[in-house]
Image: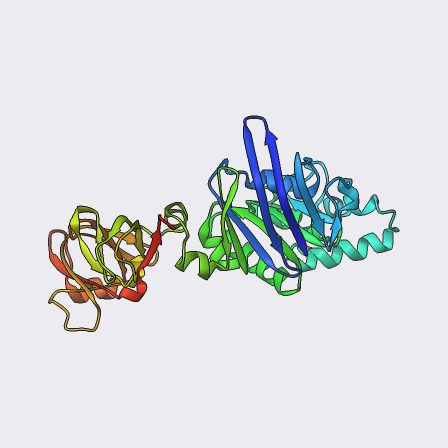
Length: 349
């Protein structure tokens, strides 16, 4: 198990503040945050490239905070691959093994084993300048994995790859994870977390603001920042009118059973949880609201429909539904939202 306990660090004009999280053995942990949030700095502290001002890094209950990099048995794969341009793929993978004083046969066996595992066995005689970005990333992975680290750290490993290469690398990372490797992966892309992680942490301005499974974080964000960052577009300032009614901005009322008589907070719900219809629904859904289509935006998941009901609502539906409803800009539609799909963050608690 990897444990980060109360880590703080002042680095140039940036501060990490009391960072805490743990990664179980064999877990895939993704640390999500915007550029400059402190993600890579945390990796460098775990790897031993930077020493924290306060706090501890524990690996399998051993304090490695001040341990030398070579003694930690932690592997770090850099965003820019950091392969040696003058060495072949074989020599790049073999390079760190030579420091372990392995004989040629042992080195060869490991190079071949991890080249096969990462799908680059056919590239061993090639030089880096002849490889694609995805191939370079695999070389970097193979070189790090050959050291058989207790924990693998990945710094934005998919950020510079096109969609096809990204999907191929995701498959490889899932395969490695399924083999029991403990992975900490930092990224600004929530889709990567959904595709890969057992557990995620959200970091903002040097602070961890939420951790949990991707499903927990996606469905139950604890702040407006997390909701926005994870792609939830429907969030509004709100006040409680009664135990069953909440008023959004511009006096839009929705049914939400808060159990409270008063209070202020934020209401949010996912675009996928909205049902559209042309006629007023005769259904058990509590919230049926009328509005005008403002925009129709194609997405890789279907079509995002922006509707004005007094506040702007984002709904995500399939192209088949768009065709069936004959939707167009300026057309009036009904939206339906189950009360159970609505989340209320109480700002007074």
